[in-house]
Length: 538
Image (cartoon, rainbow, N blue to C red):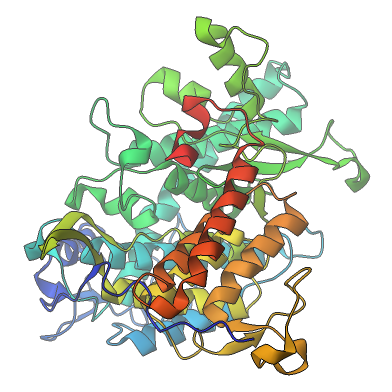
């Protein structure tokens, strides 16, 4: 029994934008060029009509007159090096995807806190994550501005220059944070300050707080009264370092992911990006006391970092255990002084006890790519009687193909969010792979097939696009105690969109309502609180 569906079910519901203005005319291009000049990285450059003034890193030497021979210069501050700095510029979608695929192949599939993983390997992996987050963030900023005159073609991508900016601007921030963290740890050690737990735990939280404070300080300050969830296209390292071009700051995901990358790049202890359906924070293996064996690592500590602002109050709240955040909220509000107050264990925003823990660099990268927002900001164009949203066609295609690379590498098998985002991309930009028929008989529990309907052997086949949503639901049930509503919602949207314009697909209305009912069932597990799950209600 094949589940039929036409390609691109989202077609006709959105307008796809394909800018043709070359990126060389953008403020982003000029910002990158100026940043390289400011860092004195233009001693040996290649300049032509199609390329950015960028570092010829294979020839550049540092103050000591030496280089590492891999296209990345040794500096006194940066000890982490790239083995390959990549091409100067990338001129096509296929070339960018191939470069990404080569880097993903080199990422370790082991957990970051596994004893057999070389710490230097972890640093190299997370440096690649930082670079690709910066590159894709640049592409997102380039193609999603609300002003059509400020949207540009993605190619050529000044790949080498973007890599160099990560080395020249992000790594020094981490070096500063590492020095400050060491200074604070020494001071507390002298004062025997362990009131918040073991000294190892305290050092870890101080390191998280220090990196988070430096990242927030580097990002654009938010306007007074602006809520984090209202910030669009604000989830990447590019936004953090170059947000002044479009007046952007960071959202909660951007802050949490960069802190985790920073912790692992700085070798300041195991640190995992931890995700709910609408929030992100840091978590880590927790030892009760210094010197305990690996057997003692049986629980995870958490750190809240997504607190905007540069006030002392905001800075002091970062690095705290999530339960402390809830405790302070409950004490500070008379409305919260009741027995049924939300806790970390009952909160939807923190996924109760079932968050997705990104255990290695590849999983963090999958979460980052899945978080790319292809909507053109605040844009709806009137077509006939209906206003339709505008989205970036090239960015959707790029997001789709990068997610397929991560899918094939096995980095998405524990992340329902990444799977449903790939499914959404296939709805917008169907690929040949997404339109393949896949046997899902084993996934469909209790399915009854009528042999008279033409399904040979009682098999059930669906398009791979639909199977992505089914996989996400299966993973949520198996690994996360069926705590996620979004996989059901995305599956419901899929069937609703697929049956919208085809009278023969009326059965999809039943399917969409079934999935929406399942989403409601999951949502009903959580106690309603406007500050905790308003986004879920929307």
